[in-house]
Length: 439
Image (tube, rainbow, N blue to C red; front, side):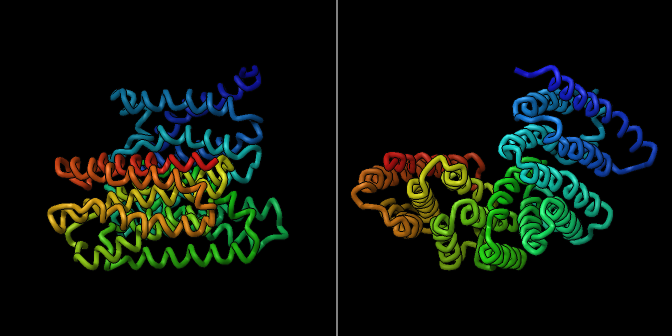
């Protein structure tokens, strides 16, 4: 039940939100501000208000109620043309499609729920989402000249640099304020967060950064804060090297720039949220991709976009998050991600064979998937073979069946279609569920 005090707080925040939109619209018109500045002003105001939630609400339920009540009018502003062109112009005064305002409130509520009264794990992701994102957007709008492709749109290097600097401050200032004795530790945490969130912002278009950045930042921050100095140094070095690799690009990969960044973030997330062993299966898939692309000269043939990485994320992240949330033992989750990536690589190899040879050798694809993507993680398990035998047999037998089904579907629809990539990710995840028999 929501108490009277909580209802008053919810009503006050909603009144401020709904009353602030027309005020910001009038101010924007009187000052001649651009649509992007007007929209980001709304986001900053919402972010500052949301950052105060830990001192207003002491449990997640009223925040979820507030998120639901706030999202409904924002959806109406998007759907009803008269409202969209009127009070909603502060949010919708840009030409490109954006769903950020609809995703904002649920993402904030989710991070508040996950933070479990740890104010730093809530405030820092929210401030990076709002203040750093606004700084990047405004800097890119006014001073951006060096552009790069981002999903379906373009972003500027200047905007990304501004996002990085402000994100670093958004992390460092609260951390240092909470414990001034760990100056260099918090600086390292802030730099890592800034690197990763800048990369995430660089590949998120249509407002999906409003979901990806705060939730991903929360999980990573929780792990980084508990890291000792040596581990933090390794993670910082890995983030810096990863950034250098994606900036320089890969001449042997058919992945677009945003897809390459997404692949790097996925691998980094697997290693940090779980442990280094969880990086082995997706790394096997990536190395096999580089070798195959170069061997068959596929860089100019395929144009793998972020959809391909989302497919891998669907297959990987449930197992990684299960470890982070302590829902599954490490051994079970590591077997799960190994199984998922083995099936995923088999599906990918089947499609590649169809393109290169005109037909697929499914048993070869199955063997390749399990040896390159499945075996490294399974070797790292050191689990008793008799416990692993039944789940392994089920998943291995499922692999050629799924390859055949996807092969038939690929012949009728483009392999790069988003729907097909999502299907592959879900099938790979489903094929790994027999590992739950290990529990």
